Length: 417
Image (cartoon, rainbow, N blue to C red; front, side, top):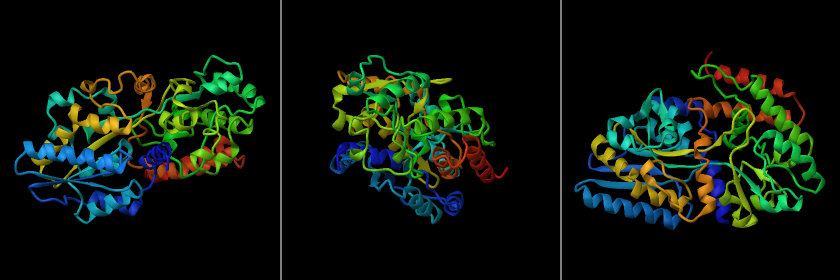
């Protein structure tokens, strides 16, 4: 499997919406750590997709830490992305969970009752060093539930070759710009964009950016009400349906997810996309043909990005585990993880990891425009009822308003209100 495909698979897994309600209840009831007082056990996942490089990074860090912290042993276990929530929930519920685990923002509310707030073990000077994006993204109900170790961004990327083929030198910055280009692109045999409506895809990387760009959101600010079926949500889905109905995006992708190399994106038939990263398309487009743009704008310009964090679970040795997490999060130590995976620092002192790399510099510049998605404990379950309704609207089976209303009714019931 190519590097780009592995990375795309990892990104999909990072945000895949799966966690059974029964297991969620077990998480809330569970407690404890799988380690002893002198051993810190941490579960992580292949953030660095190359297995040998991933192992080398963690082995080196553990060795250095143990030299400086006599008497403390660290055991880092790398698990597959697939079904990670199920495995973690089961382990915690049975009292066999790790001392620390790698989580992303939309997982944090689910495990909140099992997490030791980072403020209890992170020095104030370290907390002040985190970027606003990183710290905001791990804060739930006023408490930081993780120690950030990386950040990422999914900006709009455009294929320079496509624009050259139609004689365009200006790249779209808004919905209106993309819509205006679409007929010209279609006439020349190109798609304006690529949209994956497969219900197994995370909405964080597909529909939610459009929802946010329209000025909408999934939940109300207090998290108690579903709001994606308001005027902004209908506007976003209607715009997307216009692209599908006009043949400005590949209709087949509304229901299927072929391998990347089999898609119009890889074949150079798509002008711009927000659902692929530069690392995904580089083997197909060539680095020199990737143009990084800010996320599209309707009411505002915003895209999806994430923050990888390490969370301490209750029952862990707070001093030993806290020392380990703070050690990993030091800029000089986290850099190996960030750069090894093509991501960016979570701390201001992290600096520029990619000097001379104009492409990565351009991606990094869009970080302030990113949103990690809703920090609500039902966010993943809500995706499960919303995705099929979006697909139904795109296939013409329901109007955008009817589809969103149906999903909103089911999602609101999940909130118990």
